[in-house]
Image (cartoon, rainbow, N blue to C red):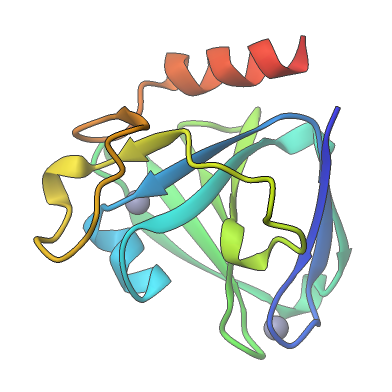
Length: 151
Ligand SMILES: [Zn+2]
Ligand SMILES: [Zn+2]
């Protein structure tokens, strides 16, 4: 059972997440807007292990429709603008996404999968040593990896 903690740049929002995570690098067009580059670095985490420690009133969300048509809620700190979390209608209620940039201790993290390789810009590096997905990773892939780590 692993545990991570993290916060936004101003420190107003802080959180902890217990349980397994899966590190996905995403090159999709939306993530590039929000991350400011490519790829976006994301931890898929179990919703039931997640706890917001402070800053609920600072979190603002921006909702768009993902490629599948399902809602993607992108949450950020309205004080400092740090992208924090994503809640995907397609993954709820089991899993949510945490932006790796906000994690306190990142030294032991390794990218496990790369999403949206088909929309990676020419200047970006796609890590060929990870599981590669042209679009979103299949839910089964993420679910199985989470389950195997939890076991
Ligand atoms: Zn902040
Ligand atoms: Zn993305």
